[in-house]
Length: 218
Figure 1: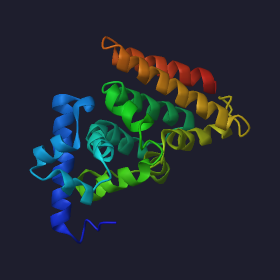
Figure 2: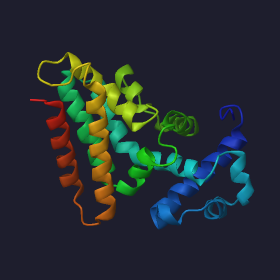
Figure 3: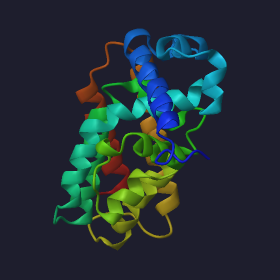
Figure 4: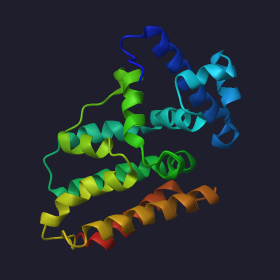
């Protein structure tokens, strides 16, 4: 594993690859990105990328994290909130939906793509390369944000609802409800990706309605 703090040259090169990937995502979309294009954009030979990253998919996930900026800022605000768990749960999901439905292709790939069950090292590596972008969270929200998959992230903020009287979430049905919420998110992201005319606000509203229905939040 590369120690980015101790090797400034390697860190500089890795950042160049991530930023080149970000530019290509914005200009060409996910489907047209290749190792050759990334290397050419960054000013390196193709093979150099493999000294730092596994493949283009890993680079795409790292590059995608720049689109978390607004969501991350809201999470930092929520970290200081004194609110009951149900209000915080809905607020986090609402902020998440506002982000993901604005860029559905990017976030469907991030949360349901090749490395979607290995997100923690991706997120950690990104903030090692870009420490100035790393927000400060409460322990509860940090554990959620660095979750290894969308399922783990959802479960982390769903657990406190088992102790609330205004929900139907219990220790017995926790895992089932978590799976239903993740399935709802995937279905809506799939829909948003196939329908260019889908309104992000409408998609987010539908997601919140699904979540409140399945959790029984009053």
